[in-house]
Length: 576
Image (cartoon, rainbow, N blue to C red):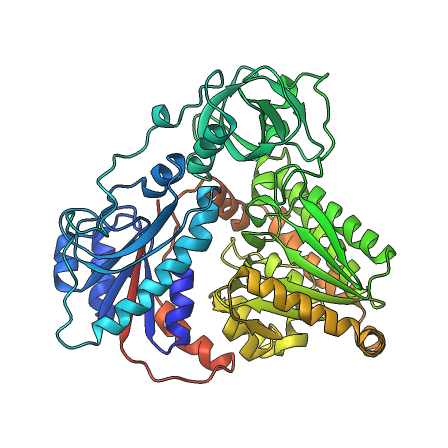
């Protein structure tokens, strides 16, 4: 949410600074004194901003709840109790948490989906709408936010306590499938539902209903090839895709089968994927759908991370898609995240992190090479959700990149311990934006919006509308390109041949992987420390104190139209 606010405000010409508040009040006070914001917004606050600051500077806080809702587990309670509607509210900071005057609020139908999914979609979109309403109100003479009034019909929420594991506990002998799913969804991805599976204490994540399989309630009755487990309920069964072991120092969330290891019975049957199982699900991560000359390749990897095996799986699916000779292949990504590049959790959990890092980046490179060399097919990347690191380079291997407005792109690696990056970025990125802008994007380490991406050529178009409208627009675009198949592939083959003469693809790969080898194998490499901190959710070790200056510099160097700054805006956020 902080990144989305950042790109929305910078695109509109506001001067923005970001401060990560990890509890150092002196540092935060210094940031305020240096920037002197006209408005402070806290998109993701986990600790109270000191009173002397919110009294001196107008400060608004995003609360992921309907009007009147208060407490740190807003979405958790709403999802677990299966509310039909929920919302997001922008409140002014006051001494009593979540009880300040209301600047804006939005409601939305509440999907029965994981908390992280609802947050990434409905909550963030609603918060952006609240942001622009508040920005207009700040500039309206005489505007005063309305106080929280529990007698008002719009005040549907109330003060709720922090949800504990006792509140989340699943009673497998009593809870039906819908209740089990609601509890796992409400805890996904933090903190998960604590349970016991084959004698091991684990947190449950990434669940969906199973339509056919049945068994003794609570019993694990099957596994999938992707590593999910199927567990029976009193009226059906659920698939559980991810587990996180409960252990001192924190466990690593991975595929359920990997976490359980040798505790898993050897005779547990492997279940085939049912056609009735909805997509996305934790069992079937890649699916192809054909409509005439257009084949849509969907890949929904948990949290957008792509392990060595997942890269190989997607590469095989892409190769198989080409064998069916469609005129257009659409790379559709996932429903919540398009891709975030290599799988840091899998690397951290491996016996040899350097070796697994290397295997993962080689597999990612092989996948991207497969797409680049598909010169007989038109490839369209439909980026409908956020992308980052190598996942932001992956769509550039396609012939056309369509991005949905509201998507945030992070085409850089350096903040992961000065990682150099591969994925043929030194070929693909300059080919679209030029070398100077490619360096700016990869070194400034700033997010950019879909609109900005289209302005600088990183994307071909930024399409407005919700996810359904985006899908329709992509399908229409792909169908039109199918009619131009011969002309496009002819140009594509000639361009690829010319590029190969100028500098072979293998040379880009060798140069990038030489740098990555040093990142992975150099003693005391900062990449390994940064990766570990990311996986175990330790606080960021630095704060982008110069992000206001960098934002202005990046806007000019990436070719965006300079806009007048209506006023300074400071986003103060907190890291756990």
